[in-house]
Image (cartoon, rainbow, N blue to C red; front, side, top):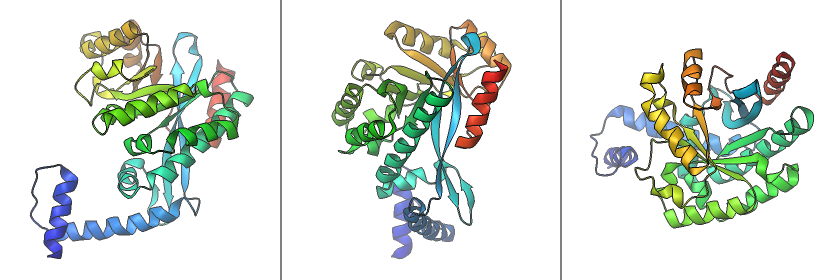
Length: 287
């Protein structure tokens, strides 16, 4: 019965309407997941979580645009754990709410610090999960973080993915409008890979489209979809950010299509707050 229950859990985790046959490795993964859950509950309390930051650059004139806050977990025995390995678990357990609140707090304080010390125009972006957006406290959480940090609302960008429209669309739309009323900016992350209809763009108070890296090509002939996304952004009066830039030829191609905002390893990998300070200071000196 235990084995059947484990197989059922795996089938449900994969997707609806699937079946799985039990394998001994499944039980090991479930036990490991339960252990990780307990450790994640203690991670925030024991200061094991850290916010890394990745630059978002403006190509025209080489000006700074902002940074994206990305969560990392310094596990005491497993080392640095990327979010893909624990964020889904945080979602399932509801831990994403207190963890997400902490990330927003940290990002707002860092944004205010950067604006004061380096550049008054820098924006800081934070990812919101579907569960966070559906939380009744999300608007108050953001408002309180802005107040405590002193960061201007227009300097905070909250990123959501198209999957918000697949959960409870009415609640998502209501929450995003309430957040927008605070003065923050809303970005649609991984644009083009999720919800199939474009009609949701007319319902959501979106300011920025972040084009998924899967649409990047090596040359102008490979970037027909990127050109289409830029056209959508221009027609709707939205800023468009190209994600996943790794090579200089990608920049040349995207610039020819009108892209000015870019993010990727070519400009900087996600880095700790102290390293970010050095990176932006050096960037300013070189500029």
